[in-house]
Amino acid sequence: MKNKKISPSLLSADFSNIDKEIKTLEKGGADLLHIDVMDGHFVPNITFGPFIVNAINRVSKIPLDVHLMIENPGNYVDRFIDAGADYLTIHVESTPHVHRVIQKIKSRGIKAGISLNPHTPINTIENILADIDLILIMSVNPGFGGQSFIPNTLNKLKKLNSFLKKHDAENIEIEVDGGVKLDNIKTISDAGCDIFVSGSGIFNAQNPMEMIKKMKNIII
Image (tube, rainbow, N blue to C red; front, top):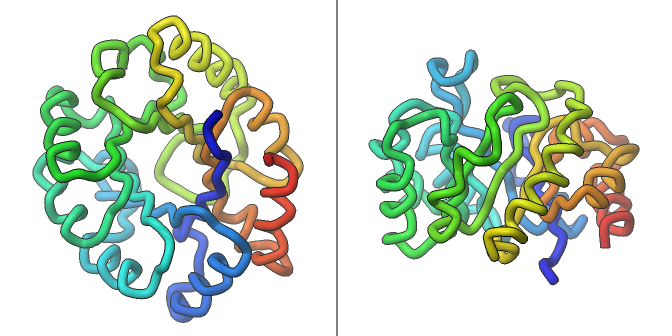
């Protein structure tokens, strides 16, 4: 049985105080740090590059869960791995050469993930199941933090779990990103999620450290 994990999204963090923010997350029991990389092309926003990932890596004691929401991700894989990514996830919609990019990530000895936008069907990743460690289901349309969870994601999660079982690929971790909060995390967990990305759900809480603990108590 896979361990359930909380991966706070640093998109919602206070970057003027990032050292303190990360230490708070670690004390709360965060398992990963989720870093959304956006290029202003694949999604309508611009966020972090390898330099920022490297700065976070120097501070963090827990693994970095780096999510590339960028075009031509194969051109940047090595830079993000060199910067300290432990998980590196690309979007199936972002390149016609998904398998090649996944192989490049795997060749560097870290975990490779594939992400699906809300409208993207599960069967698009059937031919790369043997090569990936993680499937990231977007439960909002990517590009901005603080959006509401798309309810149909629950059906998609259930279908994905059946799909993985059918293909003898149940070892792959399933991650959900977007609108994950205390009031829906149990439902998302029951639908078959393993890794829970939460930004505003954690950072907007009065006590983010306690919020992580509450979330973990629900899903474990």
